[in-house]
Image (tube, rainbow over all chains, first blue to last red; front, top):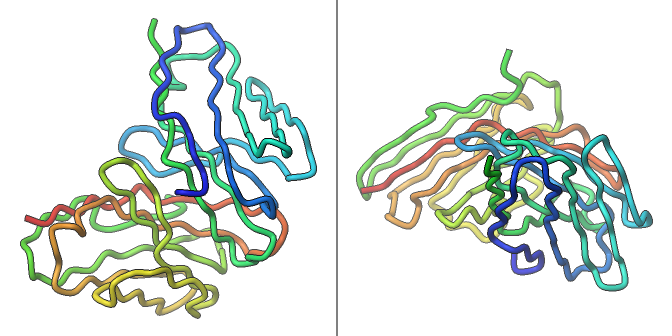
Length: 113
Length: 115
């Protein structure tokens, strides 16, 4: 996605917090999503946030949305080795009712002991 | 009882050949998708079908032809394969879309290697 940008790599120690950042350009985005891809597997939806929200918390996951800067972040508390994966940010547009998602390039998260 | 399944998981073939990838979902969803993930992990939608009708058709060479015999199946046929077609192809499905949030369920992917 040329419209959705993410940093490509993040290394974090087990037990620390991870923060993955994403910027998007389409102000008409309705929902913003975080998907997780483990090695050799398909993508799995982790969490999402509606565009009129600022924050959403779901167990170890916290999503922050700054609409003014078009910036989305995913914080993973107490990062575990099982959190090692590629994390994709994605947006869907109000004008598109058919579920078309625009994905970022993904952030490879490596958790070290 | 896999939700979204794809066959084959790996496909190695020579340039110029024609091949098909199959996808099936048992979630009762109305909408299915094909995505292409390149070597840099960039994921881009190719096609989407809703109740067997094509609803999203991105800029994809016409060598790629999706077919949906029923709403639980979406197959992808590729003619005259080229080296640049090498990628991982993901099938996904979701419930009737709209302006509400919808979760897309992804298959495990098919790694296509064209030699």
